[in-house]
Length: 487
Image (cartoon, rainbow, N blue to C red; front, side):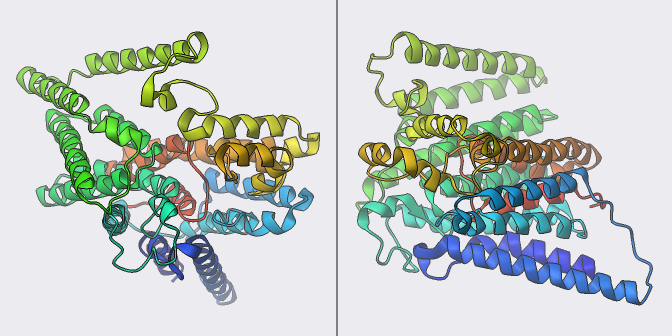
């Protein structure tokens, strides 16, 4: 019974939670916060009842081995409790900032989630299938929304100038990007690693659908996820067939992006695409990628070798060149006009859609905190009221708005839960990464979920922790770290 309860909980979070809303865009965060909290509390209550009944009946039961990641999660939760107790903003610290809802209640539920999942026995393939199916539904609605069509009335009452920032049942495009950071790697790796033709076709089509949602989302951090996923696909390719599938996926993705951009320009009601999407679909970029990928595939197939060594050298050389260019224009030639790529290459307050600014002031504010707040932070999800004290006028003069998150999850955890909060969170991640390697060696079908975790973590350097998608990230971490065997 305990296993069934845990399995149902996982299925609900993967397939229902991303689609939940009450009053369209106006309360997506509140709706998901309430749903996640109630689902977690009901599940934990039912599990507790089952455990008590088995104790009363003196039934023998399988011993559940608690993973190191779950233990770290408990310590992380304890740090959040201390952070809440010393916070000057207890109301916000309890439930979290409006639109984010990542306060103490969410942290407590995530900790419960870790232990609930320890009872589960469910296959990696089923998890990947459910995640992919739900992500396709989310993506289809996102694509429709991006072209200005609103079949279920999500945009009713939303200001016209804000419509471009909200899509599908996830909400803000920055948060949509964090969802795709898990979903796209899961679908793409399932496509590459599936042994059956039918599964490959299904996951291949699903990968394109999810990419379409990610591209329509228009968030710059989505391209980080795309690039990281492709790199990992090449790294983990074991034979020519998998290299060919990866190259085919790259060509298909580039072609789909080109088609979507063309349609976007022809549909009057479509949202304005971001500068990176314009660069990504530029004819020169498109043709260059197609030619390079085709040439690489041809060489691999003719020689019968994967040629990974040359691929790594090329990738490292390109990365080194980009770093050198960024350093030059950020340090030595800060005034030269370099056009739309300035937002990506030149490090200043405007870097990454003003992420450079919010990172800087977040760290400045942390350095000025009293020692107890340096250790335990200012309270879960309390960055907004803290920054408003010293940066309210400056932020409004620059953006006509206020930041309520650092747009970097590690910096966010450092600021709101202190150095102890960051260390304990890192403990969870490191424990999961280590156990994930073991899982993937034992069972390759675990690789898509593991890559979803890794890609989300990388994307989190420019992402936002919140109630809409972060619990799914922790769910995947809990699932990959459970000690129970999965076929």
